[in-house]
Amino acid sequence: KLSLETDEGVKSGGAIELLRKMAFLHTDGIPADLFKDEEWVHVSTLARHSLVLDIGAGGLSMHAMTQEVVRDLLMGGSKATVLGEVLAAFHVKMAKFDVDLPGTYDVGRVYAPHVKAAVRHIKQGETQLSAEDDLLLANVCKTTGVFLGRVACSFREALELHMQSRDIRVKVLGEDHTFVATAYHHMAIVCCSQGKHDEALEHFLKSFAINIKVLGPHHEDVAASYNNLANVYESLGKYDEGLKFFEKGLDLNIKVHGPDHPHVAASYDGTAEVYSKQGKYEDALKLRQMSLAINVKVHGPEHPSMSCSYDGMAVVYRKQGKFHEALELYQKCLDIDIKAMGKDHPYVADSYDGMAEVYEALGKLEEAREMQQKSAAIRSA
Image (tube, rainbow, N blue to C red; front, side, top):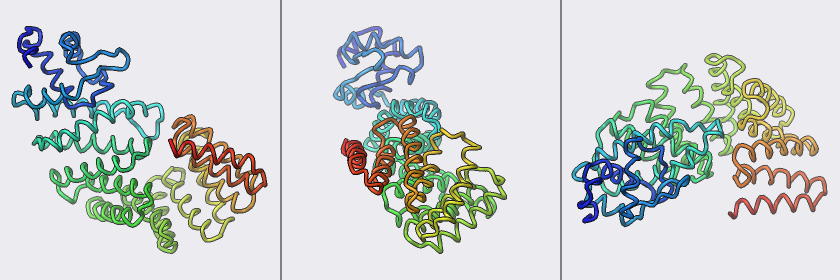
């Protein structure tokens, strides 16, 4: 603090403002593009005082103790304002992340650690934000939660952020708002990924009830809710309930989107999954092929979403004993997932597991063992 108070360059304000913002971020990998150019010019002043370390392309580093001193002693009553500016910057940066575009995943990788740090400081410091900044926080939590749950597979952290997003939106907007329904939806998705299907069903039902009440029975979000509920019922082994909701979702999705839409394909996939579990493999395969045709038409054969389509068909072929066809499709899944997610992602391990089962069924035990080892290496990392 004494060092800051005796330097005219810092006392001018710009360096202090930059330091205050950095105090709420992760200690390492602080990116330059999070700040305005007129703020970033003060980095050299902070580095001269050993308050930050400029590590070039890796961004900046700031010691945790320095951050704590700044938060406790140098905020000057501006904590809420500074946090609001940080959240606004996060909002702009994380808006570039799109779960369907692997080229945007680095956005999440760069900013998620800093979002998590800022959220933690907001909760620990019990900082009172404005309603506008609260909603910014809710949106940043939602987007970062999607990255953590769908890409990084950090399910506990994802769920925590989605729950915080829900709590903020309920406080600011009230329970009966579509943004609250969206928060419940994302909470349910994470629970499904964790295998907590009863909890997922509870969240999906809340999302469904809000959407029906606010949007009416013929809205596309209601159709999506039908599919989500059907998927959970199927996972719980309640196949009749699952088929009922898949049928409702299919009818409404065709009315809303037309027959060649990914949501229609999702209804076909879900129904096919039920048929497969009931041993109706030919019916399941027919629906998988209909879904695949839609997705190829909409996305192209190598889009990341195609991995699920190929995997679904591979499972049906494997259960029919058509092992060579299944292996070909698992290889397509593997190639797409490695390109989109990287070679160490759990989705890649899933493809190795499927290939291992096929090789084992073909009596190729050495190849099966190799696939199992590759999967195990990813899951133990």
